[in-house]
Length: 228
Image (cartoon, rainbow, N blue to C red; front, side, top):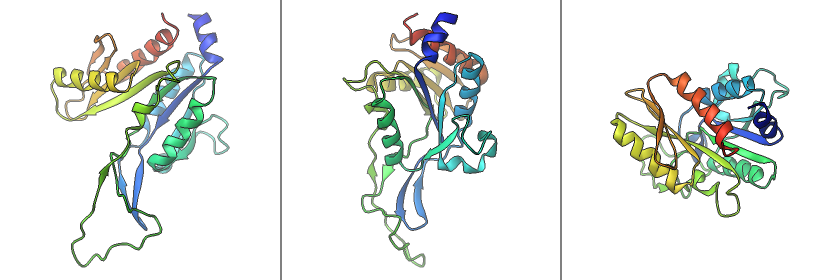
């Protein structure tokens, strides 16, 4: 185990957390809300294994002061993105870095964009109804492990709402296959169930103990990213 930890420590483990927004007009945005708490917990768990991950939060997490232990970013916990585009640019930087070994996507990424959205655009007249044209946003997670980046170990998160365990499993497996994930952590926000879905169509940590499930996710990431 210590040897594997040393090997992984020499590479970059990247954790991305928080939610993204996409502009509509000045002071009006589409939002996928998330405070980055899961990314913070995973960071602490990795550090206990003597691995120091590179943790990036969205600007949405500014009010969660507990995430920032040092204003000078000496512990790598930094606000790095706001919009989907900024998140994509950050991921591209890590993809181009040969030292990047693991990317963990806990982000709540905004699923829609407003084609004519612009932060400098005047706000709509609030005295009358306003029709908004939305288009599906690009699936950022599906572009991480492309043909040139299969060496990256990808851990993705899938949120479900009041689904059965079977439906949660199928949602996780679908993401696993579409994005070529190495692991998918599925959590349901109503029944509070968690599970880890793997490419070989198995499940782990199926239950309601979230911290235990996240701890198992960390251990599986360390071992599986070195083919153990």
